[in-house]
Image (cartoon, rainbow, N blue to C red):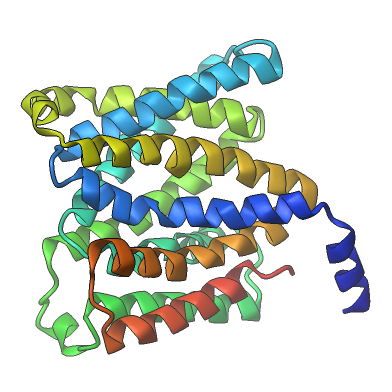
Length: 300
């Protein structure tokens, strides 16, 4: 404990500040997306967010690595698959789900992705799943389920779950597949290059349905454009860069713990910005999900 505390004090304070601000930025994605969807179509929202994020990341990649890395045929196939799965499919489901579910509830359902991914990595890849991480997974999933049924377990028996909730549940499984495939790609592609290429391919994948919503752009309010600018800059580009700075400086396990801040921050922002209600079921879900995420992401 003493050695861990000493190591914590010796680490650059700016890294911790960036990771804390990263959590604030990511938590703002939930209310910002709800604001954008008030005047913009789902597919248009996904396309604009990731197209402009990809452009910015490609420019940064060019300056940081002095070139745009060339991909082998195998790597290109992985990038295309990840782009379609993680951006075109996942974010279309996520955005559509947010249009139907309160941002505060969605912010506590989606973050169980790492817990579910850990289970699939254990089942499919033989990765070690300790008792503590297993307990964290159970708590995270239990909290998400409690939020899904609004504190009424009978909702599962009667299948009284809305379309938005079902879309967000599907998101969890899609993201798990995306993460597992991404681990394969990261063996030969840098995180920055992979993310930039995946966002570019994924945004192009959602372009056709976005073009069918072309008239929605004319209806976008100034508030909607401000929220979109937030999604591109503070919801995608900046937190990604800060996260990998944290991973490089502190290691993946310690940096990932800051993600635990996202659910409660997103709930607070959704209540403050959108006036969403704080229900007893939501409070119980917050406790279960946050504790579960901590146990799942704690250093081994």
